Every structure is written in C-alpha cells, then in structure tokens.
Length: 295
Image (cartoon, rainbow, N blue to C red; front, side, top):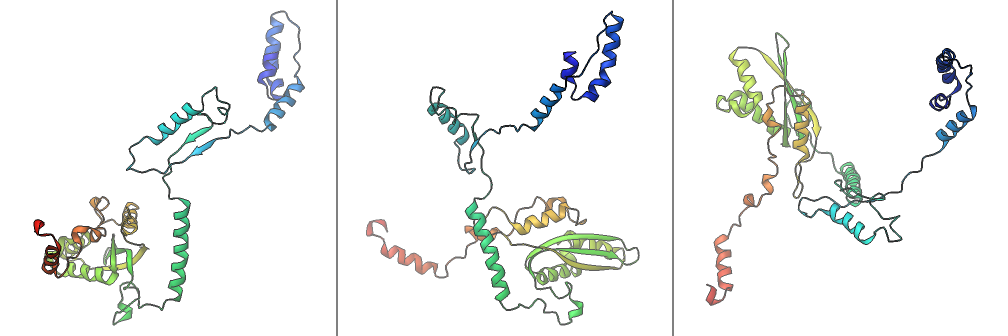
C-alpha cells in the first residue's frame, strides 16, 4: 500500500492501479481495501511549489589569448585550493563548487561601446556629408547597377540567363574599389580570350560563346562591408563573400574561393610599404652621423 501511494502522484492514478493489487491480495486470502493518502498529494504540491535554491557561483573570466602559454584556469583553481583549504573559515564561499573559470573570447564592454558610438557617429557624418555621385554612366538607363555603379566595398552577384532556355547560373564576387572597376574587368575578360581563366564567370561566358548561345547578365548588390584594416584579424568583406557562396548564391563559384586568403591585407604588409624616394641620400646622411670607427 505504501509503495502504491508513493508512486501515485494523485488519487486518479492511484484508483487506476489499485484494483490490480486488490485482486491479487484477494486471491492470496487477504481482504484489504486500499485507500489513497491525501496528505501525500498535498506534500507533492508543496514540493512542486517550493523553489529550488540556486547555488551562488562566482565566475572568473580571463580574456583568452593565443600568446599566453600558461594554463590560467588551472593555476587559478590551484590557488583557490591552496589559499582556501577546508580548515579556512572562508572555504564555504571560495571552493571549486562556488568559484568557476571560463575564458572570455568576446570583446570587452569598453570595445563594444566604442564600436557602437563609432557606428552612430559615422551615421551622423554620412547624413551631414554632401551626397556623392553614385553613377557616372553616360546613359543612365544602361547602368549595370541601376544608378549605383560607383558603390565601393560590396559583395555583388551576377545572374547569367540563357535567352532560349531561361537557364540561370549565378556568380558571387567582391570589390574594394568601385563596382564599375570590377565590372570593366569582367567585360574585358568576356572580350579577350587570354583573360578567359581570370574568373569562373568569364569561363562560363566563353563556354556559352563557343556554343553560340545568347545570354544576358544582370547585376545586383548583395552586401556592403568594410575591408580588412590594420591590426584586424578578419576581413568583413571577404567573410561576406564566402558566406554568400556557402549559401549557394553563386553556382559558378568554385570551392577554393571559400578557402582563399584575404587579398586586402597584403597592402598593409611591411614588404609592400613604399620605399623612400631619396634612399641614397638618406643612407649617406646616416653614414655621416656615425663615428669614424663604425664607418
């Protein structure tokens, strides 16, 4: 009886299971009727209503860095064990159950606030700045981007449609300069056969030309993003292009484009820094300032 009461949450469940046990007892020669203990149901409700006490945990979040070879988490926890043993009166507050370690991989609050303020200030500057020319096409109706061909730092998509079958193929690309600069390079690769392999888009166009298939190309902007900056480990512009390719927006793009290195960071390399014009004169002045023993 106690077992059925303990396993039954309420009287309805108890009454559903009790006849089986009652019949088994009668066959064994016992005439005992089971009754549900209502006090047990009240206790169950009280247990459900009772709030569970949450453990007070103190988190230590050191910033993660590849340049740090020390196991910071292990060192910190060993210090907790050493300075707050079980004999210490503060052991209840500082122990491995109440103090946890987790590396912080996100930017700190100060950097987040600075980026937010910079974004708002940049929007205000853009509103106050005079409107820039977005198109310099002589015939505005023939602009490939419908009046936005001078837009910079964009990820664009080209849709190639066969005239007869309406079969479509797409290509995703990017440009740090104006779109028209990249557009002119694409047009050049469509006309000059020695530039056929410059991009998978030009290879597809030449394949259509070889088969005498008429086509038309439509261009559109997918995303605007900033290129890589000095000191930054990522390039938002390249990442947006790779993300668009992964989302299968570019059927003509090849797999190696996803794993390609950022080309916008090369201009910040010291090897690509411009050399001073008067190098000989500068070295002559340096030798003149050296002592006689070092010349």
